Image 1 (cartoon, rainbow, N blue to C red):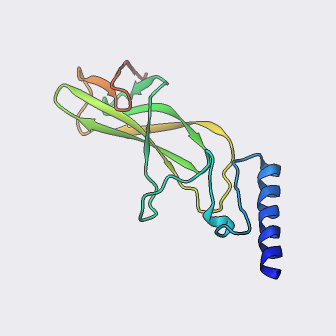
Image 2: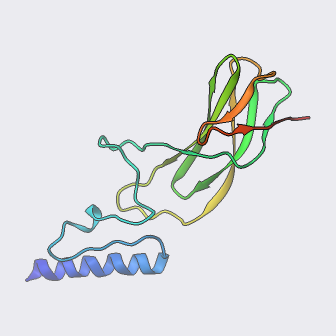
Length: 149
Protein backbone atom coordinates (compact mmCIF):
# COMPACT_ATOMS: atom_id res chain seq x y z
CA UNK A 1 0.00 0.00 0.00
CA UNK A 2 2.87 2.40 0.81
CA UNK A 3 4.39 1.84 -2.66
CA UNK A 4 1.11 2.77 -4.27
CA UNK A 5 0.81 5.97 -2.23
CA UNK A 6 4.44 6.86 -3.01
CA UNK A 7 3.84 6.33 -6.74
CA UNK A 8 0.67 8.46 -6.61
CA UNK A 9 2.51 11.22 -4.72
CA UNK A 10 5.33 11.18 -7.31
CA UNK A 11 2.79 11.39 -10.15
CA UNK A 12 1.06 14.33 -8.46
CA UNK A 13 4.38 16.14 -7.97
CA UNK A 14 5.33 15.69 -11.64
CA UNK A 15 1.90 16.89 -12.79
CA UNK A 16 2.06 19.94 -10.52
CA UNK A 17 5.54 20.84 -11.78
CA UNK A 18 4.44 20.56 -15.43
CA UNK A 19 1.32 22.64 -14.76
CA UNK A 20 3.26 25.39 -12.97
CA UNK A 21 5.97 25.68 -15.62
CA UNK A 22 3.71 25.11 -18.61
CA UNK A 23 6.50 23.14 -20.23
CA UNK A 24 5.85 19.71 -21.73
CA UNK A 25 3.85 16.93 -20.21
CA UNK A 26 4.72 13.85 -18.26
CA UNK A 27 2.37 10.97 -17.62
CA UNK A 28 2.97 8.51 -14.80
CA UNK A 29 0.66 5.79 -13.57
CA UNK A 30 1.21 3.72 -10.43
CA UNK A 31 1.90 0.60 -12.51
CA UNK A 32 4.30 2.42 -14.88
CA UNK A 33 8.04 2.95 -14.66
CA UNK A 34 9.45 5.70 -12.42
CA UNK A 35 8.61 9.32 -13.47
CA UNK A 36 12.09 9.95 -14.90
CA UNK A 37 11.59 7.17 -17.47
CA UNK A 38 8.42 8.68 -18.94
CA UNK A 39 9.15 11.80 -21.00
CA UNK A 40 7.04 13.08 -23.86
CA UNK A 41 6.22 16.29 -25.70
CA UNK A 42 8.38 18.79 -27.54
CA UNK A 43 10.87 18.94 -24.70
CA UNK A 44 12.02 15.33 -24.92
CA UNK A 45 15.78 15.03 -25.36
CA UNK A 46 17.11 13.92 -28.72
CA UNK A 47 19.71 11.39 -27.71
CA UNK A 48 21.41 8.51 -29.42
CA UNK A 49 21.49 5.06 -27.84
CA UNK A 50 24.77 5.97 -26.12
CA UNK A 51 23.17 9.05 -24.55
CA UNK A 52 24.94 11.62 -26.79
CA UNK A 53 22.78 14.45 -28.15
CA UNK A 54 22.24 14.34 -31.92
CA UNK A 55 22.38 17.70 -33.74
CA UNK A 56 19.56 18.67 -36.10
CA UNK A 57 19.97 20.99 -39.07
CA UNK A 58 18.11 24.32 -39.02
CA UNK A 59 17.50 26.32 -42.23
CA UNK A 60 19.34 29.65 -42.36
CA UNK A 61 16.78 32.45 -42.33
CA UNK A 62 18.96 35.44 -41.48
CA UNK A 63 21.50 37.18 -43.77
CA UNK A 64 25.00 35.73 -44.01
CA UNK A 65 27.82 38.27 -43.84
CA UNK A 66 31.42 37.79 -44.90
CA UNK A 67 34.09 39.49 -42.79
CA UNK A 68 36.79 41.61 -44.43
CA UNK A 69 39.21 38.63 -44.35
CA UNK A 70 36.89 36.83 -46.81
CA UNK A 71 37.01 33.67 -44.69
CA UNK A 72 34.84 34.37 -41.64
CA UNK A 73 31.09 33.97 -42.13
CA UNK A 74 28.46 35.23 -39.67
CA UNK A 75 24.70 34.76 -39.32
CA UNK A 76 22.05 34.43 -36.63
CA UNK A 77 20.22 31.27 -35.59
CA UNK A 78 17.31 30.49 -33.29
CA UNK A 79 18.22 28.70 -30.07
CA UNK A 80 15.76 27.31 -27.54
CA UNK A 81 16.22 26.43 -23.89
CA UNK A 82 18.73 23.60 -23.30
CA UNK A 83 20.07 23.98 -26.86
CA UNK A 84 23.33 25.09 -28.44
CA UNK A 85 23.79 26.16 -32.04
CA UNK A 86 26.85 25.97 -34.28
CA UNK A 87 27.59 27.05 -37.84
CA UNK A 88 29.41 24.37 -39.84
CA UNK A 89 30.94 24.79 -43.31
CA UNK A 90 31.71 22.18 -45.94
CA UNK A 91 33.98 23.57 -48.66
CA UNK A 92 34.27 22.53 -52.31
CA UNK A 93 35.91 24.23 -55.31
CA UNK A 94 32.69 25.84 -56.58
CA UNK A 95 30.55 26.15 -53.44
CA UNK A 96 30.47 26.34 -49.65
CA UNK A 97 27.65 24.55 -47.83
CA UNK A 98 26.68 26.20 -44.52
CA UNK A 99 24.71 24.28 -41.93
CA UNK A 100 23.30 25.55 -38.64
CA UNK A 101 23.32 22.60 -36.25
CA UNK A 102 21.08 22.68 -33.18
CA UNK A 103 21.89 20.28 -30.35
CA UNK A 104 19.63 19.67 -27.33
CA UNK A 105 21.40 19.17 -24.01
CA UNK A 106 18.37 18.28 -21.91
CA UNK A 107 19.07 15.84 -19.11
CA UNK A 108 16.55 13.20 -18.14
CA UNK A 109 13.94 14.81 -15.91
CA UNK A 110 15.23 18.36 -16.59
CA UNK A 111 12.72 21.04 -17.55
CA UNK A 112 13.93 23.45 -20.24
CA UNK A 113 12.72 27.04 -20.64
CA UNK A 114 10.23 27.52 -23.46
CA UNK A 115 12.18 30.34 -25.14
CA UNK A 116 13.47 31.18 -28.58
CA UNK A 117 16.55 33.37 -28.77
CA UNK A 118 18.49 34.75 -31.74
CA UNK A 119 22.15 33.86 -31.33
CA UNK A 120 25.17 34.97 -33.36
CA UNK A 121 27.01 32.06 -35.00
CA UNK A 122 30.13 32.12 -37.14
CA UNK A 123 32.63 29.87 -38.84
CA UNK A 124 35.98 30.38 -40.54
CA UNK A 125 36.63 28.88 -43.96
CA UNK A 126 39.96 27.31 -44.95
CA UNK A 127 40.05 29.53 -48.05
CA UNK A 128 38.28 32.82 -48.84
CA UNK A 129 34.70 32.55 -50.14
CA UNK A 130 35.52 34.68 -53.23
CA UNK A 131 33.16 33.70 -56.07
CA UNK A 132 32.07 30.37 -54.60
CA UNK A 133 28.33 29.82 -54.25
CA UNK A 134 26.92 29.73 -50.70
CA UNK A 135 24.34 26.96 -50.08
CA UNK A 136 22.13 26.16 -47.06
CA UNK A 137 22.88 22.59 -45.95
CA UNK A 138 19.40 22.15 -44.41
CA UNK A 139 17.41 22.78 -47.58
CA UNK A 140 19.85 23.15 -50.52
CA UNK A 141 18.84 26.77 -51.26
CA UNK A 142 21.43 29.27 -52.42
CA UNK A 143 22.22 31.98 -49.86
CA UNK A 144 23.21 35.57 -50.61
CA UNK A 145 26.38 36.72 -48.87
CA UNK A 146 26.93 40.38 -47.99
CA UNK A 147 30.40 41.81 -47.33
CA UNK A 148 30.77 43.25 -43.86
CA UNK A 149 32.26 46.75 -43.75
